[in-house]
Image (cartoon, rainbow, N blue to C red; front, side):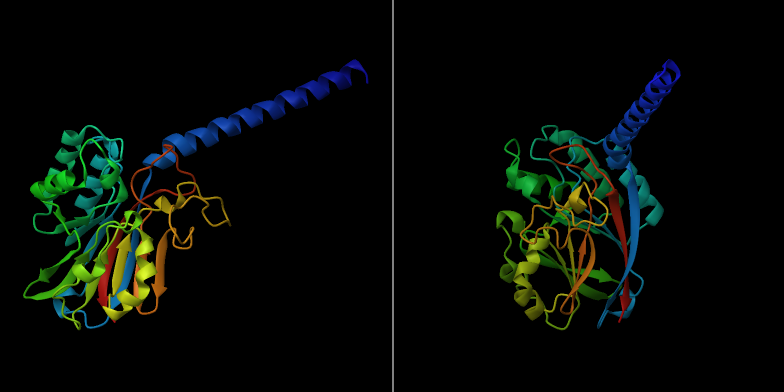
Length: 288
C-alpha cells in the first residue's frame, strides 16, 4: 500500500469515527435532554352509550406519572398546556411524586396551582411511588392533595356533573401494589349511568370480569411510561406490569370497555426517553 492509499484509508477512518461520535452525542442529547422534556398533546374521542346530553363534547385532560421532584419546568409547561385546552375536568392517575422525592412543599405548590385553576373539577388516584415514598407516605400525601384541591378517590366514587346531569367517576388504589378494591369503590353506583374508572396501572384489567360486571365505559391509567425507551417495531421491553408491555400506551378495547394508557410526564430509574415522548391526553366524550 503506497503513502497516498494509507492517507486515504486514515482519512476514511477519521470520518467514520467522527460520524460515530456525532451520532452518539446526538442520540444522548435526544434521549436525555430533548425527549424527556418534549410534551405531546394526544387527542382522542371516546363514544359512550347512554352519555347524558350535557356531557356531549365534554373535554377531559388525563395526566399521569409526574414523578415530580419539585415544581419544575415540566410542571409549568403542563399548566400552560391546560390553559390552552381549558378542560372541563382534569383526571390524574398517580405517581404525582417519585419515591425519592423530598421537596414535598414545592410539589404541593404545583398541586395548589392545579386545585385553584380547576376547583371542584380535578380528581386523582395514588400510584405506587406515593406508597413507596418513605419521607411522606401515602396517607400524608393523600391529605396534602385533598387539601390542595385535588380530590383523591381512594377506592371510592363521585358523581361528576355537567349542568343537572351526572356520570360516575370511580377511583381505586394502586393495583401494582395491591391497594385496589373495585368492589368497595363502586359501592352505591347506579348500573345504567356511564362510568369512568381511574387506576394507576393497566394491571387493573386483570379484573376484567368485575369491570365488565360493573359496566365500566372507560378506564384511564398510566404507570408504564410507554416503556420510556421504545425501539421501533418492537414491544416495549420495560413495562412493570403483569401484561409485559401488552398495554404499554394508547387506546385499547376490552370487551365493551375502553382502556387508555397514558405515557406520562416524568421518568423514573433513568432520566431517559427514546421514541416515547411525554404525554398530555385530551379526551372528548361523545354519545355512541
